[in-house]
Length: 359
Ligand SMILES: Nc1ncnc2c1ncn2[C@@H]1O[C@H](COP(=O)(O)OP(=O)(O)OP(=O)(O)O)[C@@H](O)[C@H]1O
Image (cartoon, rainbow, N blue to C red):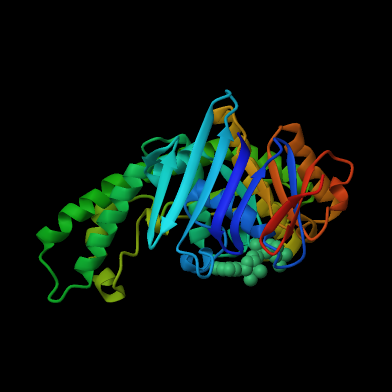
């Protein structure tokens, strides 16, 4: 899929900017603080309903602005044009597809974007939440039922946690329906995650081989969030007292995690910082490739500050793979990366929230 037109209003340093994107490579160049990352952030917001940068959602809204909006004309591989909008007024987010109000879940399903940015190494070196998010993005795009099951699970989790914190402790009968719901939806989520990881595994191995062949064979380990040989419902019942002490539910799919171990780097601490970034990038590319095989359409690929993250050989390898796949690329840098100089690209200069086309 390719974004043909993008309009950003009221986001960070952008009061209003409209740009026509190239179906291939788009480079956003400018000094530090010019607003380059904010362009990628706009595209990511539209496709995820959240930013890839951590921090308060309020900070997205331009200081002094009453709302923000992002609009894109998105061309799918089958030629279909979708007009997508995301707006925020006050604390409300609203999605629009082809002029009609749409739930954010539908908007997010329509537009797939993957992003590699200076914070991406958190996928490898950070906490489990990042890795669950990565996994669930993939599952969401292959399993239509995933979002509704996930929402049911979250609701049951919230209810059980609030019972755990009640005083005096509510009767067993009040816990049981929520624990049954957690067990039923948790089981489905776990199965869908495992099925997705089975599809991802060979692509991940190929992607790692291409970028980090020196690390040897790859093993992906998955922990589902509760003991392998037991039912979640019975474990929740048995562990209830302990959970009361902790004040929250200590097992279930919200505690799942996955890790990667290489033949020559069995622990994540064995990876250099650069290797950690490459592993994160390889994960992102494998996921994009799987998405493309499933949907017949490559996701849009955002690469934030690629030149300062990777050496030139790896930059070339990544860009070469994406160009070969005909993916639309949005890339930022303080200048045009050397690895890109021979490639046809549309180059935009970004300065204090103003965008102008250079090439
Ligand atoms: N809510 C906001 N309102 C107005 N301006 C903001 C807001 N949030 C951030 N900014 C400013 O918008 C700009 C956004 O910077 P962004 O991170 O997009 O720049 P960048 O070109 O990627 O920079 P770098 O090269 O330093 O990473 C910065 O100048 C920042 O101070």
